Image (cartoon, rainbow, N blue to C red; front, side):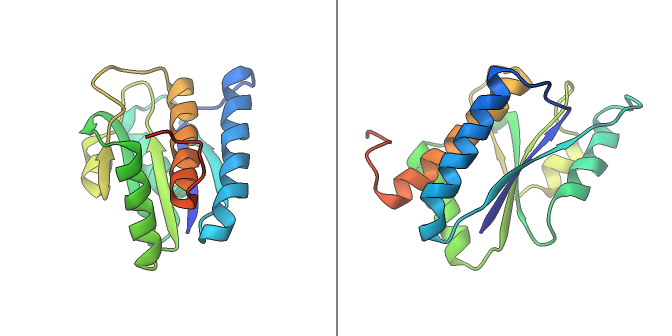
Length: 156
């Protein structure tokens, strides 16, 4: 199962972009024998600044056909890393070819995108900067692969 991290906005380099790249590379190495990966970052941008409704179209346009969609949102369900790993493993085992994690713009996800999502997932009730959410999401997909592979990375 391939993974796409779809983010509204463009990274301008820096430590956060380097961390995302590092975690996605680690994921690819760990996940390949598990039937997961590769993972990729897809950036979409509404240069006209039309808001979350316009961003929804861009995000959904980047989601592969038939992909499971996870919308990252502070109002979303919270789950443990092992539960997240189990979910990805279950979707893989059910034959899902793709999974996309969507990070919204400054105003978050439009209600239509949240309604389309298979899961609305939160990293807690606090609002996080978009670049940090990219890092957190990339780390969690790597952690999920590490859990599924039985490596010592995740200490439970």
